[in-house]
Length: 116
Length: 114
Image 1 (tube, rainbow over the protein chains, first blue to last red):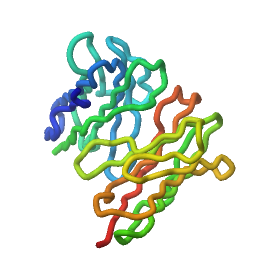
Image 2 (tube, each protein chain N blue to C red):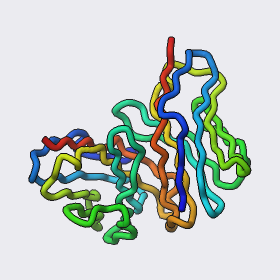
Image 3 (cartoon, one colour):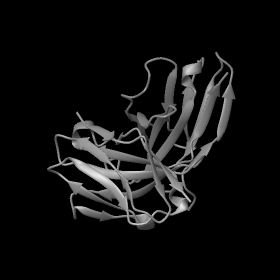
Image 4 (spheres, rainbow over the protein chains, first blue to last red):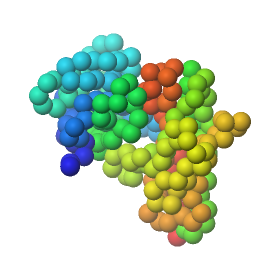
C-alpha cells in the first residue's frame, strides 16, 4: 500500500506562471488536506476536500489559489500567477472516511515550490 | 480558539542524554493532541497521539508524552537521544471548535551532539 504520493517534489516557477501540485491519497482514503509550510514555521491548514467536494477552504487565500479532488485522479492544488511569497513547502495529507475528524492523517513528502 | 506554543525553536542535547521538547496548548474543549516528526527533506510522520484515553502516551522510537490538563501541556520526552532523532518536531492540537482541523505549533528543531 503506497503512501500519500505528491508530485513534483520540487517545482520552480517564474513570477506570473501557474503552479500545479498533485496529491494521490493512500488507497482507500477519501479525505484530502492541503497544508502550506513557510520557512521556519509550522504547517498552516489550507483546504479540506472529499471526492468532488470542498468541505473547508477557510485557510485558502481568496485569490489565485484553488483546489479540487475529482472523482478519478489525484487532488490538485493550483496557484495562478505565482508571486515570490508563494515559495513554500506544500504538504498533502489523507485520511480514511472518519467523518470530519482530521485525525490519523498520513502525509506526503511535500512539494517545494520556488518562485523566481 | 485553539493554539499551540512550542516553547523552544531549537533544542540541543548530547547523544545518550534525555530529550525534552515542550508544548503548551489552549483549547476550550477536550482536545486531541499529537506529535509529528519531520526529518530533513521528508514528509511528516505521526510519533504519538492523545485522544482522551491514558494521559501518558507511548509512541514510536522510544518517545512518550504526558497530557497534563492542569498545566495545559503535552511535553515530548525520550530517556536517551540517538543521532537518528535529529529532526524537527511539531506539536498539534485538534478539537471540535475548529471542526477537528489540525492546529500546528511552529516546530522545534532537535539537534543531537555526538
